[in-house]
Every structure is written in C-alpha cells, then in structure tokens.
Length: 170
Ligand code: S3P
Image 1 (cartoon, rainbow, N blue to C red):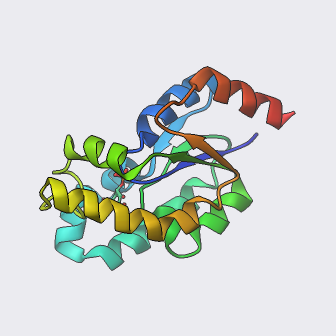
Image 2: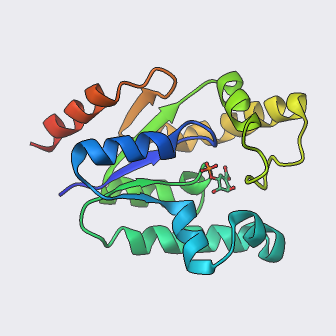
C-alpha cells in the first residue's frame, strides 16, 4: 500500500489537507513536526532555541526515515524537510510526493495568522515576512518541484485528488 507525502512551504495547508486526504483514503495521518515534538517532549520552537536548526534538521530526517518504515500513511512534512539531507529523493523512492503550491502573497497571509510556533518567521513584521517567503520559496521551489505531482494548494479539490490517487494506485 502506498505512502503519501505532502510537501510545500510553511502555511500551504499540508496538515489540513493531509488529515482530510487520510480520512478519505482510510489511511493513518501523521504530521512530522508533531511526531518530533511528541518524541522529544519539546515544541519545535524549543528545539530550535535549545539546540539550533542543524540539530532540528538531523532529528527531522531521522524521524522521516523511521516513519517511512510503517505500512501505508499520509505524512505532512515540514516546509524545510524536502530541502535537506536528500529527503526529497528519499520520499520519492518510498511513496507518492505531492507539492501543495501557493504564491508568496497567499503563504505570507496564512503564515501571519500563526507565526509564533514557527521559529524561522516569528520575529518578522508583515513586509519582512513577505520578503522572506519570496526569497525562501525561490530557493526551495527547486526541491518542491521534484515532487511527483504539483497541485494548487489554494484551490485544492480534496475529492478530485483522492480519486486521482486511487486511480494511480491501480
Ligand atoms: C520549517 C517549517 C515548519 C517546521 C520548522 C521549520 C521550515 O513546518 O518544520 O519550523 O524550515 O520551513 P511547517 O511547514 O509545518 O510550518
């Protein structure tokens, strides 16, 4: 049974879409950041503050590898996961990768509503945030676009995507 990886920038809706998709497909849903937080007994923000980003990236790819050993799941990864440690290639080999694409303006307006949990953006004002998203997305696009499928995260059609996944599996 196939694993589904949802990838994309912070704020693109990976967790929301992942939960819906998992329930339609009858697969368990896992959120990589939440899994890390549970295993470490610390929030992502605390992990960044106490141990730094490099340490987080190590945990992130180790946790990704251990989850991938499970049977059949929908996994939402962090915005940076595909861009480090060869993780995008690993995910492509072990499942179907779907990139939820959004524009910098769409992303910035969604991230603005939930900044405090996200260490990379928590201290930015609105114009700095938009600039950060533009620059970071430009770098990260190269990794995200390696996904098997690219879908418009803003106009996502969960039923259509579910049908496409079921068809693909046969
Ligand atoms: C990060 C995105 C976050 C989280 C961490 C780093 C990033 O996940 O993994 O704060 O580098 O873009 P979300 O994309 O779920 O916010």
